[in-house]
Image (cartoon, rainbow, N blue to C red; front, side, top):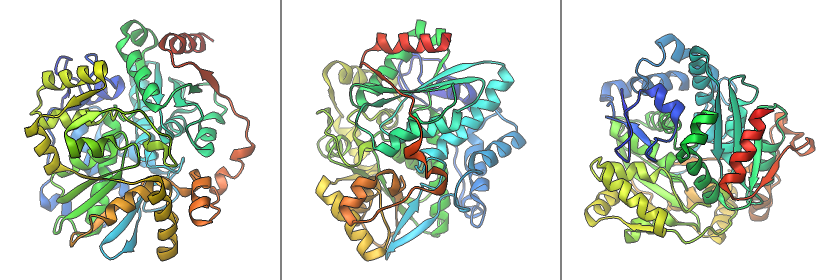
Length: 462
């Protein structure tokens, strides 16, 4: 299994190389040269298996010879041992033909744990074998950062720096990043929005002197390992509802496109997915693009669903690569237009293909709060604001095919928004009960590449 860049001019890599590299040296994102498929008999055989066994069978073809069968099985077992539900990703029925996939039972109460805990174990195994040390720098709109810190805190071969937009994450999200005591993790509050953090991260990867000097690696959703881990719960949930013998649809609240792109990969592997529905909040660039064909950034408006406050959806590049028939030069041109002018236009033929693969919807702040209130009243389920965005859009696309909406975070991560919407005080799990009493370690930094790189160099020299 080889991995190639979406921009076409970086060398192909093995799974291990692509995982440890993150962003390709031509600025592109790594994708598998071909997507392995699972016949119906193998999908049907997933029924009744543990989540860990499903994960092994779904991901194993993508790994190549990076890990032996026994090593990979051990990695998966360790990755999910700390989850708070035996099913790992349980389904809850909300209404006829509408189900909620709870992805918030991991250590940091967000869906990012499914990928980050796995990547942490894979990095540790690979780096120990290679005798190397790396520096991970990540950008987060809220959940990726805490999941990364939880996965890598205390590891001897890794230093972790997480950039988050100052004042634009919930207090729980912030404290999950700023209260770990391990010396190898660093929380950086950047004066800007998430897109600024993400842009500075890409700038670091494109500064090859810095990149090579600190041995930079990335665990944002630009890392293929993140996407691969998320493919698994599409299979586990769909099989629970009768796949491959009947189709299933998914609605995904998304800002960076990584989670729904994982669903697209599951579909390419052979999972019988009917609809893949993109759910956006008021920062609706993905919905606007599907509607008009113009990908135009318009600035980020802070919302009660901050993890979706994004205008530059990195993983959308992976979808563009596919719909432009894997022509890296075409994707590179679009990304150059985005960087220089803040927009690009999807060709008519490519737009028609996109619309054949995805549908979308937009949810306002008022509608988000109303959905939290309505869901609690009618089902007793307390939704986080991101999950509420998904449930609202899903309700507009229900039909005869079962719909699964991804619940991406625990409502306790957004207590103010939940309390205002439905009047409920949601407690953190006991292991986090003292979160608001812990001391914070955080450094405020300007939205400036030089300042960020200097700070990272200084911390690594200590």
